[in-house]
Amino acid sequence: MSQFSGKISGSGFNELILPNLGALRADVVHGPAFGVDVSVVDLGGGQALAMTSDPLSLIPSLGLAESAWLSVHLMANDMATTGFAPQYAQMVLNLPPNLTQSDINLYWQYISKYCRDIGVAITGGHTGTIEGQHSTIAGGGTMLLTAPINKLLLSCKAQPGDVIIVTKECAISSAAILAMSFPETAKQKLGNETYLTCCDLFYKTSSLLDGLTAAYTGMINAMHDVTEGGVLGAVYEMARASGLGVQVQNDLLPLGEAQQQVTSLFKIDARYCVGAGAMILAAKPGFENYLIETLAEKHIRATVIGKFTDQEKGCRLISDTKDEPLPYFEKDPYWVAFFDALKKGWK
Image (tube, helix red, strand yellow):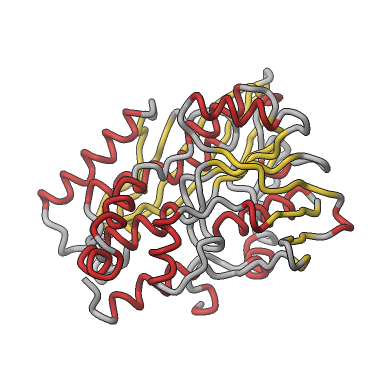
C-alpha cells in the first residue's frame, strides 16, 4: 500500500474507506467525510456523541514531553471544531522496543497531565511494544464528548458569504517541530533568536481555546483546525466539505517571520504545511470585527483572509497580480522535509 504513504489521499479515501463502513446505523448523523475530522452519533433526548481519532506522536528528536503534548492536543484541536471541549480519551500505545521503562513512564505521565489540564478523562485503550516499530507514530487515540446535538458545529456547515478568519499564523507546528528537532542546524543557519521564537511557538499548537472562544460568540457557522496541508489546505477542505467555493486573499495570510525563515530553510511553503495551532473560522458576515476583538481578549490573533462563495465560483486564490485556482496538495511537504533533514545528518 505504498501509494498511501502518509495520510491517505482524497481519491484513496473515496475508493477504499467510504464504500466499506461496516453496518449502516440510523443514529450515525455524520460519519467519515473529506474535510471533516469529527463524527457524530445521535444519543437521543437531544444529546449527541462526537468523536475523533488521530495518531499518537513519539518523536525522539523532539522530546517525550513535547511528543505527548502533540498526541493530546492534535486530537483536542479536532474536538474544538465542534465548539465544545473533549471529555474522554481512549489511547492505544504501540511503543518501540528500545524505549526504556523510565521513558515509557515519563511519556505516559505527560499524556495524563495534558489530558488532565484540559479536563479529559482517559477511559481505556491498549499498551504494548511492537518489534520493528521505529516511526514517529506511537499508536493512536480517540477523543469523545457529549453535547446538545443542535449546538454541535462541524466543518461542513459553512455558508455562502461567510467570512473566513484564521487564528494565529501559518505553519506554527511545522516551524516549531523542525527547529526543535534540528536545533543545531536551526541556530547555525537562522540564529538563536529565531530558534527560541520557534520553541515558544510549540506550545501555541493548541487551538482548543481558539475554537471554544469563537463558538461562545454564537457567530460561527463552522470551524476547521489546520493540520496537514496548512492554512490553505484547511480552507480548501472546508469549502469542499460544505459544497462551496472560496475566495482567499493571498496577501492577507498571516505568515510569521520565524515560520517563513524555517520553512524557507527546509524548502517548503508555509501556506501549505502542517499548521496545528491555527483554526479556520466561517464567521457570519458583519460580525468579523466582533470575533477578532473577542479573540484578542484571549491574546489570540485573528485575521480575515477571504470568504466562502457559491460552489460554481470555484476555489480561488487572489493576489494583487493573480486570480488563480486554489491548489490542493494530497501530500504535505513537511514529512519529506523532516526525513530529508534526518538523511542529511542535520542535528
